[in-house]
Length: 229
Image 1 (cartoon, helix red, strand yellow):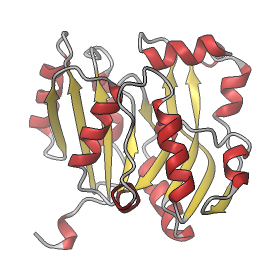
Image 2 (cartoon, helix red, strand yellow):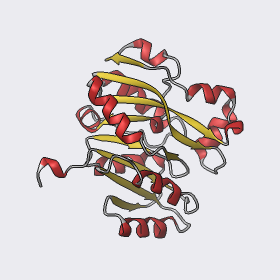
Image 3 (cartoon, one colour):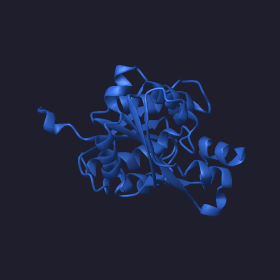
């Protein structure tokens, strides 16, 4: 196994009872213009047919790895995905959501150009009228590059910590032991992102809205965010 066989990026998808939406999500990942990817789907004890759908997808495309675990929550599912990641950069996409076809290629390019260990990008809500103004604002970051522990980044317009709208160097996550805190029902990505922001040598913020955040879903995160504003 030479260096060349490692994928450039790993996309981690925690899956819990998402049989209806997971196909669209994974299709968007496998349609990426950057072909050198690994998609790690972690089935977190779903009681619907999520696992069946995932197994079919994995059979059709060998870039997909399915991990099946007992229900342990989204943080543990994402951590299992990070542990299995072979890519140089890790992305997180929720099973209800999807990303634009150019996302991985353009984020990797931005990280390489800026020599950054973290990239943050924007997103859109669907349907757009379901999102309160505050949420739309949070998903519209302004371009910038920040060094380690730059307080500006933490308070920078719309670089708020949603793990799904960011990409992280695998080396950073493993070097600093950054993982999601199990047991936090909500806000688990805030803690993760603050650690990454503080410890990354450089973070690049992109205004591009690559992420499609589907509001009409039963997921805890989405309910919380839409109720919050």
